[in-house]
Image 1 (spheres, rainbow, N blue to C red):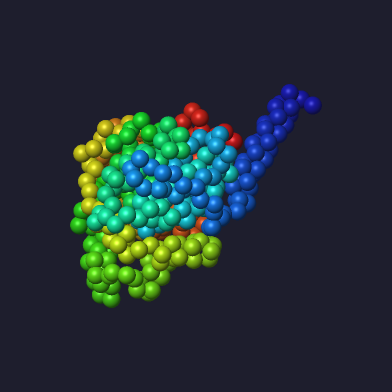
Image 2: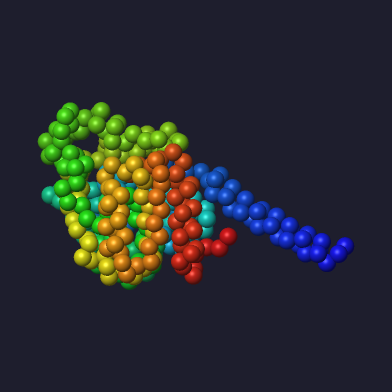
Length: 316
C-alpha cells in the first residue's frame, strides 16, 4: 500500500471514530427519561424561606443552576436539565419564592432582587461556591441581578427570553390589569379562570405529560403569588449590565410576544463589557426551551457555549 493510500485510510478511520463518538454522545442525550414528578430536596435559606429544588447529576460535574420564569417550576427546565445532566453537568433547578414547592409568603411584591438574594443563599446552602447560571424570562432577570449583586457566584450567564429593561410592557400590563375576557390578576382573589390557565400553559411541547404538569403547577399556584410575582416585573438593568465581564449566551425566539428584537439589541449593547454569544431561534416563541423538542437543541446550545468558554466544561 502506498504512503498516500495509508494516509487516506488513516484520515477515514479518524473521521469514523469521531462520528462514532458524536453518535454516542447524542444518543445518550436523546434516550434520557425525563421525570415530571421528581424527588425534591429542600434548603432552609438565610433569607427566611424554605426553597425546594431538584438536583440532577452525580455531584462531580460542572455546576449549572437553571432558574425558571414567572408561574413556572422545575418542570420548565426538566427536559433541558435532564439532558445537561446526561452530558455530564451537575444540575440544580430551584423553585423560586412563591412558586412550585417553595414557600409562598404573603408579600405584596416578590422583588427580583429578593429572588437573587434567595439564589445566593441557596448556593450557600448546597455548598456551591459558583456556577453557570441559566435563566428564562423572570429567571433571566434573577440571573442578571445575581451577577450584578453577587458577581463571585457567576461563571457564565445564559439568558433565554430576556431583556435589559421591562417597563410598561403590554403583556405584563395585560396580565396585571386585564383586557377583553380576562379581568387581570389584580381583580381575582381565590381562583383564576380555567380558560385562562389552559391558554397560559398551552404548549407545543412534544410530551403531553410535560404540558399537563405545567398546567397543574400553574393551577395550584395561589392567585396572590401570581400577583406578587408580576408586580415585580418593572425594572431597568441597562446602567448596571455594562459591568458584567462573564461570558453571556442570549437565546431569543423570533416569535417572542414579551420581548422584541429591539429589546435584544438593547440587551446586547448593555452587556458591552462581556463576551456575548447571541442565538436567534426562528419561528419559536417566548418559552423557547420547551417548544416542540427544543429542549434537546437548547441543552446542546448551552453545552457548546460552556465548552467554548470554560476550562472545566465536560468533555465528550
